[in-house]
Image (cartoon, rainbow, N blue to C red; front, side):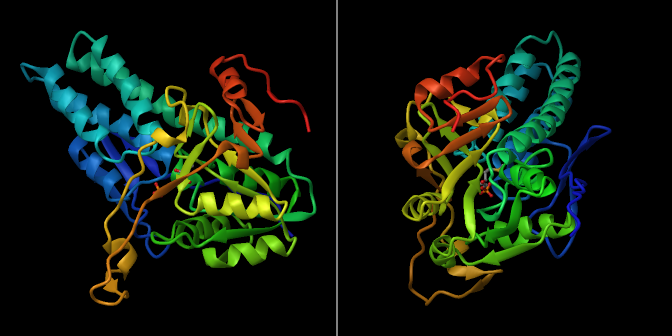
Amino acid sequence: MNREHSDTIRPIRFHQGELQLLDQRRLPGENLWQRYRDAPAVAAAIRDMVVRGAPAIGITAGFGVVLACQRAIGQDDWRASIAADIETLRAARPTAVNLFWALDRMQALVDASPSAEAAVAATQVEAEWMLESDIAGNRRLGALGARLIEPGQGVLTHCNTGSLATGGYGTALGVIRAAWDAGRIEEVFADETRPWLQGSRLTAWELVHDGIPVQVLCEGAAASLLRSGRVGWVIVGADRIAANGDTANKIGTYGLALLARAHGVRFMVAAPVATIDFEMPDGTGIPIEQRGEDEVLALAGQRVAAEGARGYNPAFDVTPAELIDAIVTERGVVEAPTAERLAALREPTAPETLASAH
Ligand code: MRU
């Protein structure tokens, strides 16, 4: 079996003052690139799921600020123009903290710039750094996470955490790529991930594209799969990790963590340090995005639920830290996460393994 990976998918491009996004609503049927020249359109793209996944949202918003700076050139109150665009980007989606992380960094660069032209230059360097360092960080956390996986079993993942959800390579899917390449994984299972089908449309597309066999399951099949003994680790990403390790991620993640604990399967969260919100003491304060009822009541624009039924559509849930065996970041692995152990990741020189070795 071919265990070489090809890591060719890059969903975010910036070229000659234009942001280009691979439209994730159209995959896997169509490779359609959307083009953007102003920040409000980028905010709409984030809200409408052209681009999604916490790190990809942050990077995209970063380039959105470059566009805001370009648009402000020649305006009397160029700072106010950029500030208004940043506020519009900030309102695009509430849960992924990477959005606010990126915008805060961009705002600081704008504040330090003497002119809109200078702000364009500074923010473009920063956005390009965010994109490249995200990919490099994902390769590193992928390698660290892969080392935790004892060969001989399968893994189960949820939503899409791959190249499409990041600058490239992926977080949880980066761990899976690295572990597959190292021969540590027997089989990969991907939850379909209702209602947006990030698992069956996006994760399956990426894995097939990169030559890694994948089996897609309905979320309802996860309990019996975990009971079967075929899965050693559930591996997921994160939209926001509170300071104590409580983790907000795609709706259904909490249920998977409970199932994993009930069946003696280990549970890994893979995310860059930018996804940790050190100002949020625990998961109870994380804002959970509620999306439109139609996403649940209809499929591909066609209503499937009985007329008159209402929809309940939280996009994320929070998994308590005590259900998480390891949080894997580019700066190191934190096993059995606590606030104290996670705090060590704030130091750039944090050692590779912060909790006691297993
Ligand atoms: O609603 P989405 O598709 O943006 O949700 C994405 C997730 O929940 C991912 O697991 C998370 O953002 C991590 S992506 C590396």
